[in-house]
Image (cartoon, rainbow, N blue to C red):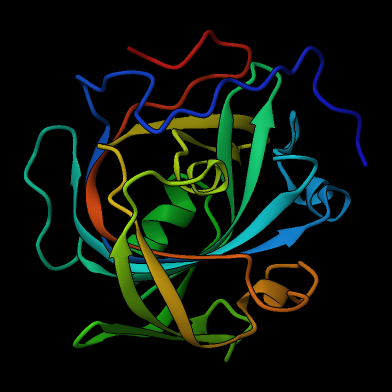
Length: 257
């Protein structure tokens, strides 16, 4: 494992955003989310993270997340969100990270999306590992099913099928549930430099969920070991409205106000 960033003291886990976003770079809604998580060894995860970050842990354990949802109305600045090209299903494989400033975040190992133009923009502008996939989200009463089959750039045929039954609303999520969902930024690497992209949104409305089906190979396609055993956490959320601020340069101060 690479040595941790110097003086990395993780910021407190907060269910509410620690900053306001008055001048957003991007706006969007994340809707109909299924969060499926497995425990992972930090030693397996840290080599896959951007320079300047290490695996974020809770009680010595980190996590691999498979998150399926519906992206809705991506918009730039204060302009209205785009109704068609800005709305599509997405499934991502994500890890949990902390940097030398103590900023907790997520790192995306893959992001499958069903609209080609957002995939191209995400890869070119933000250097994110977006891939173009055939995708569908289907509701049947209290059951939601998410399917994905990869097109380009591959590996072609990598797929996932997730079905969850929505349970009761969580009045007070546990420490683990906050750790997995209350994330106020993304760590990535663009043009050879580490980048932190902050976001803010209302507190997650979270529900317990029963995993009815999970057949996937997106986790191994993302360079991670195959999940061992059933997930340790399965959650559902109807969604939130999200704002992203401009990227923060390495070594900059705390998250924007």
